[in-house]
Length: 192
Image (tube, rainbow, N blue to C red):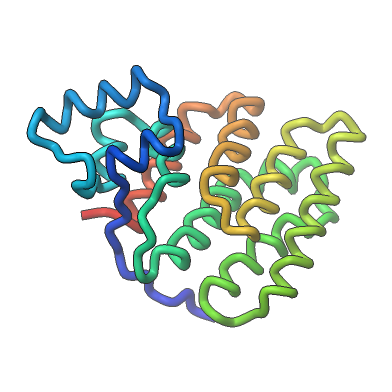
């Protein structure tokens, strides 16, 4: 089945929302200095501008302060799935016969595209969470992070999926690749 085309949308936040969600002061003031002195408290800030001025970690954090936007939830589901899928080979190398994280990622995409119910998505998320717990019990920390990323993807928690994927990549000595991959995914959906 062909993947539906995703329209690029603009996800924004504001200085007010960043403060409301307790943005780190030094990173907040760094962004303010880049935006300029005339930037208003409620003026929209494109997440791509945060990526440009503050980097991937601040951009990922800012997803918690995004202003509701038509199509935004769908895009965030799809981004979360892409973040988790980028590190899925790490899990599948460790657990080649366990498809729970892969199924959670698939459920995230299907839910975003209106092809599955919330209950089915939740079941896949729960299964990925169980996979993460099983990996922790086996001291397979990197695999656990991948499964957590898949669980978060199914729940459309973009920031959590990205952070778990980043952790998995760091433990597998691919941190710089993860940062570049995550920035590429953000641009894929939000790019200008």
